[in-house]
Length: 401
Ligand code: AMP
Ligand code: MG
Image 1 (tube, rainbow, N blue to C red):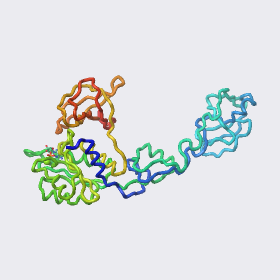
Image 2 (image 1 turned 60 degrees about the horizontal axis):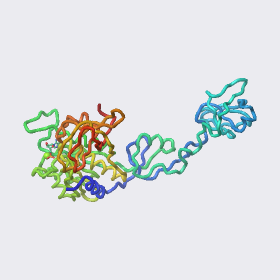
Image 3 (image 1 turned 90 degrees about the horizontal axis):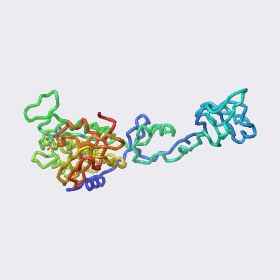
């Protein structure tokens, strides 16, 4: 059986990356992946300007003028001020262009004004309170390389760089299907043996969050003909993600059907939860993931396989964030598989703490309310004591309470 590392390497080797590129306005760029190197259209700052509200002057004038300069002129935002008259100070505001001849700005709080003269402190240094042209970035400079995923912060930078549209990879198309004869949806009341289906929507939403256009394939029964009919359309998608039917039971058909219509790169990984996960390809476009049906296994295998695959497809790199943390409680287990324990991460006395939540069964959803990360156990680990250093994997820390 492959280790997680081996399986993830096989996954990356099996990705057929995105080709199609489209230009989108900044309003639609957050979360998208850069497809071409992007260069700044302007210098930033575009011109030397004042960092503060105050007075622009030439430092060399101060000693000869006894540190009291007559006030002459004003530079406001959006102005193109005249040059500084020798031996004078000019009123200036934050962001206004520095007049030619000035080499320092003194903040207004530090000067005294009387009889049309400004008295300047003796501590003034050349360059003080000046933002230099292009000190942030220069025109033509490469701001982003392909594969970078835009955050909201990047939108700020792109706006300032004079970029109105960005070349990004066209969204991947994904199909999501849940399988199982036992699965129903409310308001249908449960008959004996039935359960409510809960994997499909989180899978769809996470794929959308990663930029995919998702088709909801609904719930398929464990019926070979019906399943085959559904999955035979896999070639129309970049990603097909199924839930359930991936293990060895004779009703677990998904993997068999994928093996018939495509090629399986790996099946079963030495992880807990999520061992019976399969990855492979159909044709030269489609990546399929047969995720296990247990709800927690579905979430963990999405994180460990589908998410890195989406990044790789966009020619982007992905890593699982890992931080050392102090175990808030003890946890014991048998060595064997790498394990991801649902955990609560929090700060205490300046240290990152990780509490293994009660109820680690892969069918147990209750602890998800508190889950904001995982504790990762290596294959040979037999657990940890309270106070031990463990590996914490944070999820979004700003969600949940
Ligand atoms: P399977 O992977 O099909 O063997 O399913 C493993 C376990 O997960 C079984 O208890 C299933 O009932 C359950 N299960 C499978 N698919 C889903 C689903 N979409 N939502 C909730 N539970 C599921
Ligand atoms: Mg099943």
